[in-house]
Length: 143
Image (cartoon, rainbow, N blue to C red; front, side, top):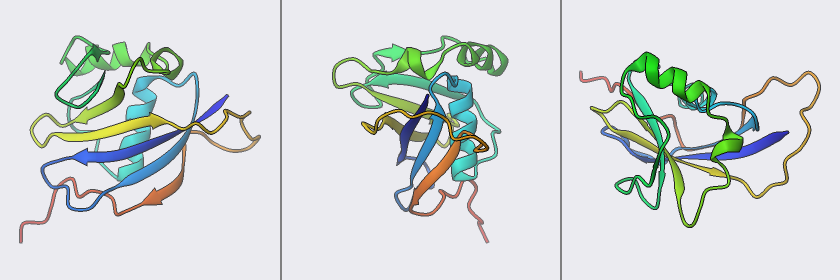
């Protein structure tokens, strides 16, 4: 089944404008797949550590999906956790994606209430189906 996810910028060292991307993904995709989809959707370089966690806000990590900051260990862990295992979230929790622990890019991921649907033949998933705001500038030009 295909799920619709909304990915919204929450904060980041160089965040100027709000960035929202709506991504359609297979429900059995992993958190590692979601990491890659977000990186592609906002034009980042996949060159830093990342984590996923759930909580009411980003300082409240009620559920941490990997307990390692080793890049290979985390990637292996995230590859084994599907979106179906994460959603639905309990209570008022939100899913957070934290990328680059120095510049602290935070994104909030929510699952749309839109009904899941069968994959369309010939369509490659994940895919961005809606964009609002510019891509965040990961490395601003300091001229």
